[in-house]
Image (tube, rainbow over all chains, first blue to last red; front, side, top):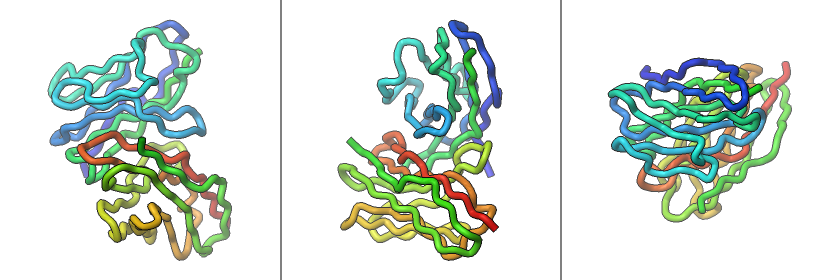
Length: 113
Length: 112
């Protein structure tokens, strides 16, 4: 069964450093998303991406965040200057059409120290 | 805006007990409804879905029926197993591939 692949599975970074989280969505999917889950809390929407541009973003997705689809397969989330409160599990998801369900990757656990 | 409310956990059950996790939603239009499961240390897996009123989603012995009149999508299983221990998230998606909105999650622990 097709999978959404995320790398790395765990990243530790120092406060103020830039991080890039990588995702390879399912190849025939058209819509891509990033979500985050702070430990033990709700899964929160960050941003959606379609046709090479952001289609929607939440208030969490401020100027410190950016997304990119640098080639035909990768979808990245960049955090420019990480803060302690950015520590969370970040999930990438993709879908062909939303009513069919979203396929999530296994997540990247980001720890900011 | 769209929102999902699900029962607070944790829920602890003995093996073979009946499970219900309540989920209600607020949405404009006709959303699609989902249950996702997160096993310890893993990501989110789609458990089941329903895309229109009165649809029943089912998978691995779990069921949920899309009830428009009560705006609910309660998750049920007749006989839980230890391996069902996980966090269960109710979620909805509005029309036009709008992002999933999740409930807060309900942690289920099943003891032998």
